[in-house]
Image (tube, rainbow over all chains, first blue to last red; front, side, top):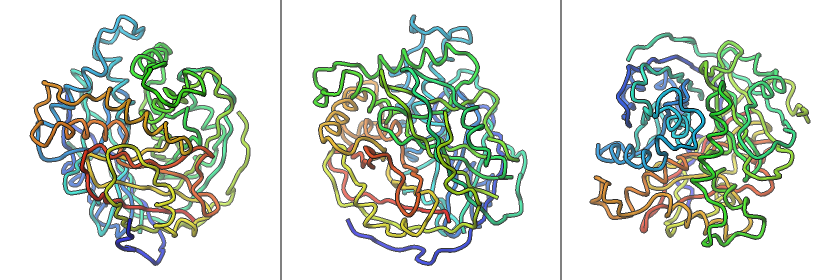
Length: 153
Length: 153
Length: 153
């Protein structure tokens, strides 16, 4: 292992930026939202070194970082998570909001309610193949509320 | 998608606050700890825009954000994770600390060792149905040590 | 629950530090990289209270925090995740980059692309049994690029 680069040897003062975003309703599945976030949160560009958190204020949809190129990856995510977290398990007690509801809560916990991505030189420091996914676990999830917070210098 | 609101258009200087919390022993299962965190960490109220991280210093218990209303959701979490991560798999090599130990490590990795939640106007910016779960994966886990760190402006 | 300690009652000004790290290629499996991170990112020592994020810029390897002592735990992680996320599922559509590729994307989403650890008195505030894992999900993953960002006061 080699240290490639000290991007910011000199430590500097920090600032913060926060905004709410409403995502339009998406069908059940995994959706790339990187460009949506970038357009909605231009404040990212103001940081030379920092972090950007995207948080989803729901318990039946989630956020993750994964492959941004081949749409079949996102279809395979839906296939896998439907097998890993079955609907209609007779052992579920929480079953009055539809067969997709309890699995949606479980999938959301497995994937997580936020992503946290470094900012370098005004851009998200994602790898070349990385994008941000909205993971919609409900059949009719409706709009989804996000909070984007960026901080750094 | 619409930008609903620029909460903090003007970028400001930041501050940080950190404290340790000891949680009393909980039985195996999923427990809502949002109000415990809020009472133990009043510093949250000092931030107009920021973040709050809760970190658990253990590898057989974890933290997640999920549904805060119906207790059956938390029971179904226990049911699901016990099926997804079985005890007594004969392939486990690490089996000398009890049949619940290796599954506890795996569940902790699936759920995560921390939650990161935005702060807006002195309050955690959780969705209306979101709460913080302590996920106790051991039969007799004992006290659990948390570190709460808040930063923002 | 008891508040054990207010580490930093007085809220202070903050600074940030960011650097890239290249990890040498590792074989498929789970690898402890805590000491590697500490050696590569000496800036951690400059923070009295803060956070350290380690982010991986890939979608077929991941990072998590788990048990740092018994190597069989890491072997059991490999065993478990290979069962939980099977190769050669005939339902996968994304199957042209090798049988380990789509499972690698799924495992990476389950485990996460970053870890976020508090810093207290210039050290990572890990529990005594906690370490940082590089989770290499590909058979031949090659070098892996990380971004370490620390902030605090």
